[in-house]
Image (cartoon, rainbow, N blue to C red; front, side, top):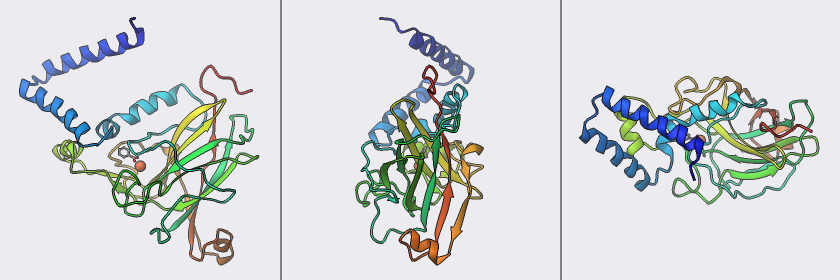
Length: 269
Ligand code: BEZ
Ligand code: FE
């Protein structure tokens, strides 16, 4: 059966690409190099890296135009479903006993657009370690390290401790690296936390939060930074406060409040 959305989009893509090939006088050898690159991308296990670097942010922006509430962000290629559930209320992402990096306490509240606290929202958080590497993606890291799920409390509040992730370099030795090298671009993303939110009524949202003042905010290789997603973070050195989080070293405190608006066609209640 014909799918009208597929018909509209794919036929326009076909027209656009045919026009593009004629406009740039793309030769058969160049055409084959492009198809080989896509095949190599899959064979190298880079998953959606190439597309996520060049195109994912544009698709995310389109989704943001039709929805109220906190803006969404790119998911990137390193999300894994099924992260472990964490004990609360002071959640701590799974980490090695000697996990490198400054501890980060990330907290906030989830509300509706009307400011009503949303309890029981599933938050699924993942971030890179101090070397910029993700568990189960890069070798040598315990499974589920710095990945975990927990729920907002009765007032919609949440708190989780992880480590401050660094800016990181995306894999540069594979096909995506070949393209970026040919364009003379760098490979860095600014430091960020990834979070997915899920609610039985409101659905799923994907966010990503960046740190004010950090490097690469203006030159993200994935062009995905949006002002609304840049948060401020403070170093807390007060021993009374560090002890409250079970720490004997300073930590970074960062807050972000999520406004979870219903998807179009679902009402706020
Ligand atoms: C990330 O956020 O992890 C990511 C996004 C796009 C490309 C590579 C990594
Ligand atoms: Fe990431």
